[in-house]
Image (cartoon, rainbow, N blue to C red; front, top):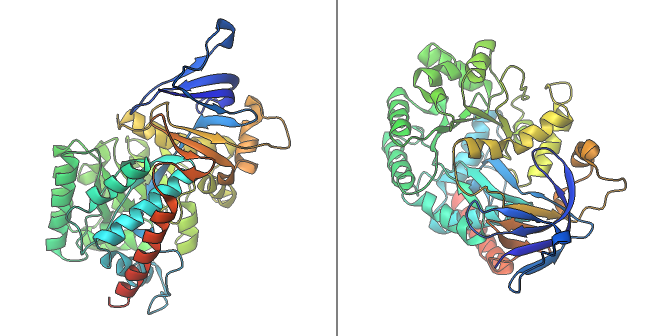
Length: 426
């Protein structure tokens, strides 16, 4: 059985070529699609599910280049006990209070909420960076199982850090090795300023042992650089380079706001990737991303603020004016670069048969030469009607097909109240 998309306006995600065609979508991880020439008499099979795509755009679905499942139940949560005065206090009084309060059920609820939000916004793959210091063992598998239920592929990492003590850091290393020994994933690290040399060395050795890469916050706030220079006599990217982190094309450096010319050159000369998170940076008032001198490997994430990659792309473009070297094409390239990251590193789950069908009826003609104008100013996540993951329809007419959406929301709402009560005890 396959999906058969009739009368599709297909937009090739690489070339932006617009093609009017029927498409057969085959099931399976990294499965294929076939363009159907009706002049040769081809037609849907008896068991094919047919979707009429007349007047709709069909294109490759999206990838979240950096996410935080642990923030999945944060929307609407009570204000912190103390109003943060800077970025470190934002971490201390908000996010480190939240992650310490997570348990099995709230992690599962966070993951289900995040996976559903990804799917309904057109993303069929998420690269996640998780933290739950009081529930480390098995946390990544809980997230993986929830994402699998929804039908969203994933590349997970546990955030290893010394901030809760070396014992918790070692537990993070153990959880990472256990999970990556059976699944694709990354070696997650919080940030240089919460990681001592011993833990950094252990993580770097684990990265090489597992043929993996780091997923780490880098120079999100200038304090990260100040701490590194005071404690280690070097800048953050220089420190990571000394540990061999930049040698892996699987490494993701998140944020990268406060970098000097040498650090930018180190990154540009390496195979690592940068994940830009424009809205989070503005929300935390930590600075502005500038991709100049970083090379081509820049992709976009949401940093757990939401799961809408189309929104992230628009934010990167509009808020980047005057502070970043960004235009229509570079915005779209960053938006799509996560596919290249996954492909280069042979991660599974982002094959041709991951598609989004957009009910987009713009006021002007859609052509190859003007697609980027529609992408920046027209297409939004509200236009996502159907989503296909690994050849299977996981969203149909804006409704989840793989899970009972209301049942999941009842669960997540109940768990959010539990989480918020637990946060009061921290």
